[in-house]
Image (cartoon, rainbow, N blue to C red; front, top):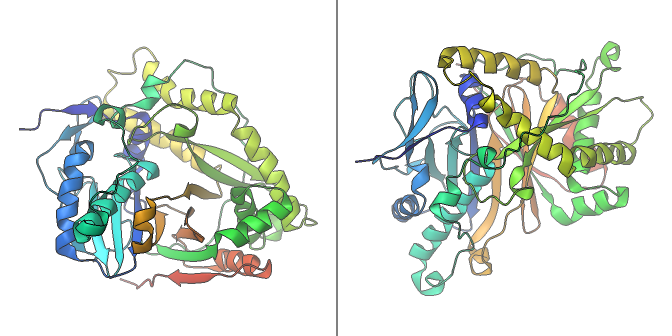
Length: 416
């Protein structure tokens, strides 16, 4: 019988307090192979993966003072994809179930997770191990001896790194500004549109290097321009704010597969005279300031600080949830759009001939773009809850006008 349990981390508490039908706080990571998926082999590979990563085999429970995760004997089942991306995994109508699901469609393997279980890096770790096991089972003679680079222990992967690395640093405080909020009619209550744009890593890096900025800053500048072109004239004096999740594993010696990230917010106010390179350079300088060690460490401590306030632990959970939800609402009102760069995805060279690429999406209640790359394939996975697509048309058109080749895929949305 399962006898292991642990409390959720502080970022997970935010997701638990704020998940809704429109934004069920689910992310998806996918791997596209060069041939159709064999479901029976994938199911066997999934069983092997669950034995190797037992900390993902948990269910979520609600206590009087906190939520907690408990080990379970439940086994996941591979299914052919039959739901929209990032559909609800945990909620009022879905309880005592695993907090992730695995599906396939043609050549693609999908792993979707409730964000209280892990972040995108943890989800990608799960996907890469699953794909590795699948390909080894499918091609035992060619790949049976191929080693994996993921060697962290089970205790390292289940570590609450927020708690471990908390030092009590006083967080920096910033005066809230009235930022621009995207306008438009929203899709029916629990629907979203998903757009997948493929670009050349080499081409995008060339443009970024010409401007003297990072790839992230270049793409965010293009996103800023796309939003600016849709802003009403009377609101163009407001700053546009992009929120960017930061992988804290790059700042602390952590191999956790649980949540370990926070977010920075970078603002830009247009004058109407800028070009893309100018905006990118200004954005890049501000982003580098936000990503300094001092600011990142202070912000990380800010996430954990509430846990150490005397008297907070015995406060009933429903009071904590309402408080967290309110402060999250205040924070999201300072954000125009979210941009998350998961970076370059690598696999063992022996596996590369079998894999076409990777992609990712995240649920939201607005506009959220998740970026990842594999070899020369750079993928922008954008989730939008708006019926209008002008901002995204502006983005893709602007990138094309800058000389980039783009291949675009999009989901269809049907009225219920």
